[in-house]
Length: 48
Image (cartoon, one colour):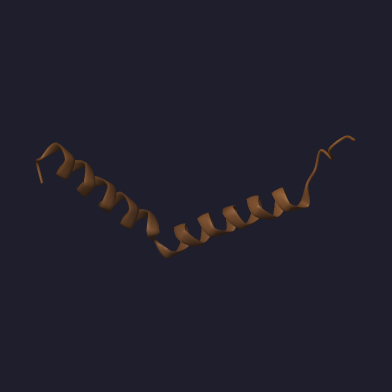
């Protein structure tokens, strides 16, 4: 029994992921992500 090369479930999950990434970028979540990652990095090093 061969597996189909294209699965609708996989395509739907990938499309949903892309849509959520675009939504996050549109809402400005990238700036929040970078601010949190910088603070975490500085706290680990002990500077902040």
